[in-house]
Length: 500
Image (cartoon, rainbow, N blue to C red):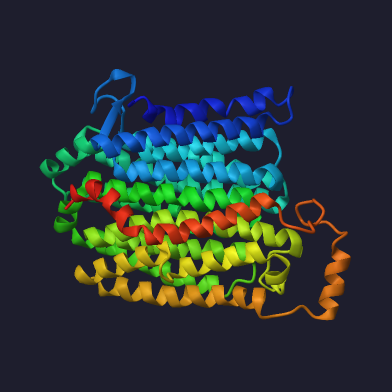
């Protein structure tokens, strides 16, 4: 049964070779390979989740070499939830890309490589191995951002590459500092070695700062977020939906895992300034990201800045070092992935019939595309935190945990962010349902039906059934996860209780 753990990485990594290798013989090789691999990944994730439920946390020693010498893969209840999440989102995006594109076989190779990378980040128990998987994730994402083959997409990809390389380098330096201090890279072994070295020694504190800074770049916290708006705006809709749902999610998960598994709450007690600084940096990201989202006119850029704010809130909850707040952060991490995937797919569908992706392009689409518009509105209010959606459950836990731990600023920031999130989503909902296009706009829209969009394809006259299904499922899932939040918390609790 434990073989399912490494196979979560090995199968998509191996399968990534097939779309390019078989593409010369079969034009649909990429999509077929990705679809089969995504289903296999879901099966493996289900096996891992079932074993965690039945037996609790388990590990796998790669190559039979036992840790701390060998590489260890670890599965607990948090891992189980996230690998299932990765599988489900991969299946949905592969289905969406069937019609929305890109249609090149290379795209599916990169998508599978990214799936392997984010899966590896979630299951690894080794700091250097985490770096390897972060780099796999980064390399695949750089290529996917440029999949539009436009100058703007290429520039966004290069910017992401440069900033991402800086983040990876800082992370690797942090790993080096900890290795010099302890002589080990295994997370569990590091946790045992650090108290003897001393949490407040310069090597350990510097290592923590470098690790967090590198991962903050990957997560896109302000002011280290500069790669994200262009990357989201210039990517194909299917790419944006996938990376928005999973790439920063994997980096935020890495911050959680390193903070609690490697440094533990004891580090926060000895060096409280380090976690306070992380909490304040995250809180600033929440406010600035929300304000920047309010002033955007392009929907994808708006959602990109929204992610800057939402991940700031998640990291703030992690930095509070309180079980309630940590539970809220993980709930919001899962919920955000579901909601953002659905929102970006909805934007892709609406933009396909509107001929653009600005807020004003959405005028009157509530009547022309009722299902997708309703799904978008539902997901938007779920992200705001309107009960009973998962957005409310996660934010509520973060606020409760922050207040109980004396971090009132985090609680206040969460409330302010909620108001700002409502502000920028209300602008879109108002245009979807409460504005009608003028006669001039209607004539322009009719004429533009025969023109092409910036992606080069003729403007669609209707939204695909697949898009409707994905957006509807995302909206239903956001509400269902909120209604089942207590059950989800019960699943996560065994992995979190060991930290407190």
